[in-house]
Length: 77
View (cartoon, rainbow, N blue to C red):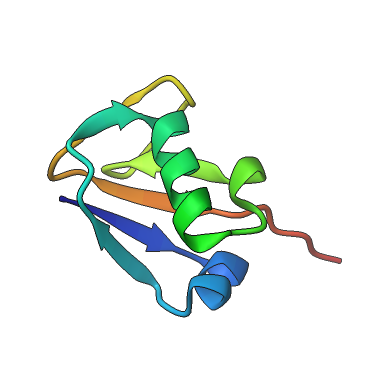
């Protein structure tokens, strides 16, 4: 089980700020594909990912017990 923290638009689309999912081990890219198929998150491909509070790349591993934060792009003026 991993905990996925969502922010901003992603939070609104999923209608929650935390998702707990059964994901034993895989890459960030695999996790994003799983989340995209289940929740249809619009900004997932452009979002930054952090695993246990450290930024991660698409090929980094996510393991059972990790906390993953998905941070969508932010624009300001």
